[in-house]
Length: 221
Image (tube, rainbow, N blue to C red; front, side):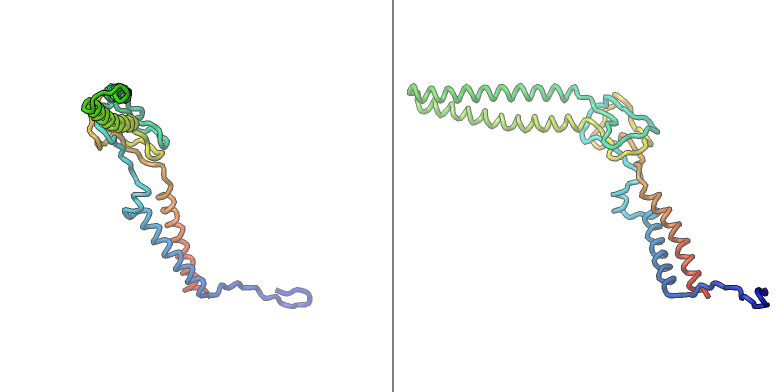
């Protein structure tokens, strides 16, 4: 090609020289690809514990299912109530424990006043000792009942089955009015977790990345 008096202009040629940088980047993307493939398709037990593919929920106590609030295909949010056990027996037992505690507390107060009056009025040592022993027994029963009431309150909270994570309901194994045991499978959900999708995408991206850099390293000019 001639320009201004026949001078020729050579065509520019762009060449990419091979370098160790391409090899390093290729190796980085290669190992990144292997790591992403492992987590996406062959996760370890530790990864599965942190990012479960499925979650099967169960009650920590036995009882009769009173309500189930979800169906297959429903989306549930984390900590939302999915099912409940019947609370009638639990409420009855809790009320009985509270009444028994109040009774023992009243007995303790009466004995405390009786001991005080007996000392002031010159009651025999045997009768005072007997009242003190009865007071100690009543106080021990109060402690036991207080512990039982707290346990029943905890059980009242455990009668609700809540979602560990947000996700889609895959299966509901039981129906309402069914008697279940502690640990029985009740509801299975697929948690909303982008971990596996991200790692699959990362595996594909890093695969093409390592191919790109290896090609330029081995076949670059």
